[in-house]
Amino acid sequence: MSKEEITQKLAKEMQDSREVAIFAELIKDNQICFKCNEKEYRVTRLTLGQKQELLRVKASTFGKLSDKPEWKFREQIIIEATKAGHDLIKIDENIIKLQTSIDSLLEQVAQTIDKERLKKQEVKLNTFVYEQELQHQKKSNLLQFSIEDYLEFYVSSYLGYLVTEVKVEEEYVKAFKDYKAFEDSKNYDLIKYIAKYVGYLIRVGELN
Image 1 (cartoon, helix red, strand yellow):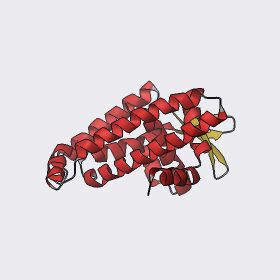
Image 2 (tube, one colour):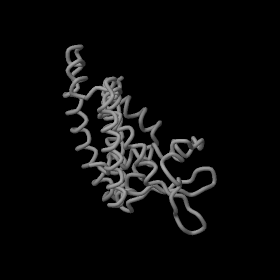
Image 3 (cartoon, helix red, strand yellow):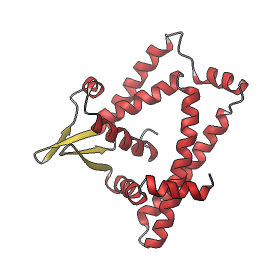
């Protein structure tokens, strides 16, 4: 499939305008608001206290995994993958380059008024995002059993718990009383929304 065909496919499947609007909302207001099952929710950027909590949880989980012999560090897996012909270092370089391009375009999109120029930026942005997702998927498949990558998954999940709020009357309050409630939730539609929007938070550097 050519790049042009990929771009056209993306424009249809990802709904360009909605994707860019979400990024713009996050950049300008530090939050993304959405509705699910007749309730209003939002995900917000982390407060300092939430960042500290996330770091404590990450450190605790890292300690537990390090003591389990069945879990390997990324460096060990990279060596094994390289011997098998998979260049993980090159994949990481591609992801970083694409993120730089995405960040630059996000700033341009947030400031662009001209509709024609905005449309071109939207298509380019979605192409970069798609290419980066492909690289992430390759990396994920190879590193899914590494300590570092499990931590990445766990931290992203915990981030979703921390930043999700639901509107009760006229105020937003935490959507889940604790992380276990988040893990045990059967509200699959809501979890899908949270996972999606946490992805946006990560793309704009919330875990950096």
